[in-house]
Length: 510
Image 1 (cartoon, rainbow, N blue to C red):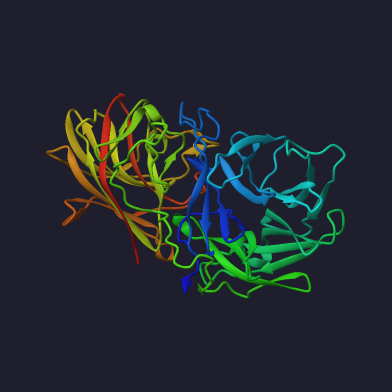
Image 2: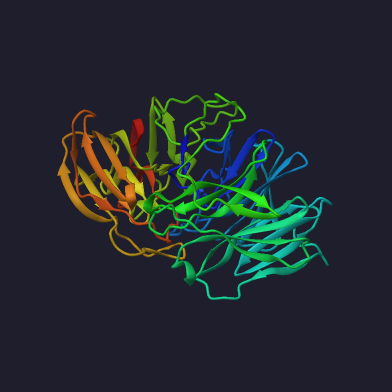
């Protein structure tokens, strides 16, 4: 039996398909690079990274963290993945560029080709009909259906274009997170929804029609929080197994760790999707490849890499940078990840080349050895939990003296529409002088029952001493992402300093 939620980590806005014996799932990655993660599974319960669709979405100052700009809470949102006549299609919008992107590939691992679709389609879903006509549904509260040109470059002139579902009652969150299917000759549209009747709980809704230009009828199909803080399980795609069983891959808010995937069985009765009354606490789904060994979604790294055929170093696929990295200022050699600063940054959120992994519940911790011998005055380098209300432990220098400090952000939003309004590194809760430039650090995160506390330590790997406070992290919409464990360097006074990280060890606890 496999526990449900199936992954205790941030994989929101899910869409899932099956191609022969293999399941593929796409999830929102917003400001992380490489982005557009697609996971692979043979049983819907265990997953590994199959690919990232792009290394860079758009080369803008905001995506590079330049000039006080960022794309926190923006970037790549809510993708739809489909497979049609031997080709994969992934469509999504980016809320900083206000563009709609279409990525295509004949192999899931790429190469992926990018094109734009004229228009902007919030939370869109793609459908290839039996006659090869192509449609999108999208929107919030009012759900639009638009027919696309055969090359998917934009709306088809004189094609079908109508509102298929419209909110009629009071709501907190109108229908959105659309997923469109054709099953046994009928059309199904699934949405997330929040109304006063559910006391703010997210629910799943479905509308059904005999034809795309016909009447759509439906309503709520699933309402459950698994006994977890009224956090409704909703929004995602549905998929069938080779044996004909159906499942919905939805997500649930789990505090600072993020929005995590939950699998819910369903079946069709008289052409209507009937969900299980409650999400099961565990599942047992036959694998199409019994005994398959999955790559880990998070993991340790000794930073020993060989360049690929193109001479590039490709880090393990559980790593993502916060925004676009500056490749001239990072390197991997002799078992270390080295960052050099190339711009002044006021705090952690604007540190370029911060290398991250998802935090994992119920608890996790990461340890790393840091060499700060190349730091300059005003530099901070260390390990963090990256989120709006971040916490970190770092080496810093002041008047040539090296200190170990613990900092945290403990106040309200510090960015507005992706622009910097904060020039403070964070609140300093502890500072001790250190005699050398090399230290081993540990970051611990506790996510049980939304504890969402991060704690930081220093030591020799055998005996650990806590530095600073137990810091409460909060999931907020200015980042709109679960917290990440990160390795970072930023300079507040002068550029050119560097830090090297080695012997990175990641543990999932509990």
